[in-house]
Image (cartoon, rainbow, N blue to C red; front, side, top):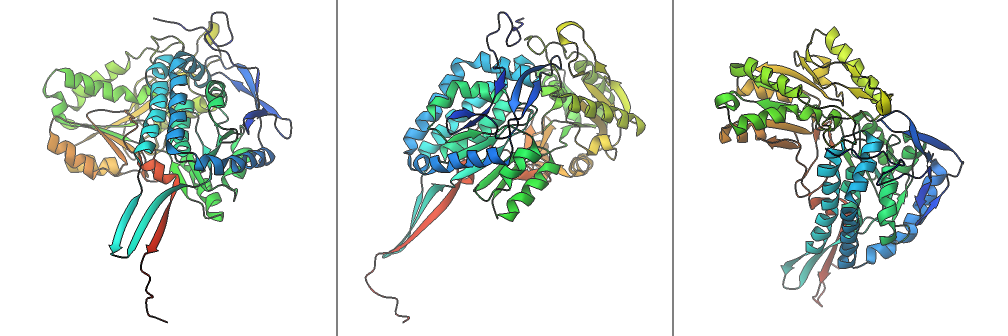
Length: 507
């Protein structure tokens, strides 16, 4: 067990500045209106830094800087851009522990997750897109002996990116790596709940990028996000967050006919077929861990497996074991490496989760474990903690249909394959899903039948760079990760060239 010291205290490996301005044109710039807001840590509910409160004026300054930098960056050789991404990854790897502690302190998630997943995955995304860029090629089509169609990939120019609070650094990497690799300049707005850890990252890597290629405007959605997303000066908007806000982003983009990538909400089914229980072996153990994945990152994951569907043949046995496994999840201080579940990211999110616990009980759902706020003393007093909660109920209930974004799973049963697929698809969302079975034919048929952008099969919560991620239905538009994202941040230029000296003969 390792217990990291809180940032800014004796023995800490990382510290936050007392104040962060906007990062514009390669320098820190104070907010145009001179306003700041406090940023509390979910660990104890107390502010640890203050952040510039951005407005339309700050967005315009950032766009000025991005437009000034975009042409030269877009003309920079792919090999040189790739080299910069690799150096960013190397810097991050060298300071991995510091970034992990900084993100845990700001977001509340266990440092075991930031050490093992968030930061290593973020590093890998920069390396992956450096490689994808070097391997990218255009095309040439010979239409006839005298006519050739060339296809070139060109950057869009200046793009807007708005990231959520659940994975502050990983979500930034998901968006920045392909956008920068593709040759774009970026204006990034972090979530107002978690705006500070991106600045710790900037302190490590900002000198590697030409001034203006990356700009960060802090602030709230209406004050900074809306003017950024509605600006005619951005060529694309990429947003990750809740579906309600995604609708607004689409409206803003439509005013200027700008493309969008939207990664939105989810209510993911996690389906356990009877044959999971056929033997008491490693696979059963793995499936039980897969059930408890609803508590990863405190359930604050768009693909949280928040609906568990268990086949009736072994329903009681599986559920009893799953509840027991859930009760083995170790809560505690987020900076302790033994802690498995930390703090919710904000008090607002904690209150939302507790309200859904009440809603579930009012609907007649049964709490099998959890359901209570955890109130610690000492250096965790005032933090935002809640127990992992397992409900048993019916898929028509609100706790099965609405995104809670917390460590809450709603469990129901199914009879056969068709019943499982009907229940799984009975949702507005379609971001992720899980299928657990020893029968590969069942696994394949289920994966094809489920209406979701990613179907984990005998696994869950893996996010490799070389696998496309995104949603069906109201879970979004477009994809994140995978080399296809390069083209999401590029235009395709077609040169249609005739090498014949002869006219067509029409006129």
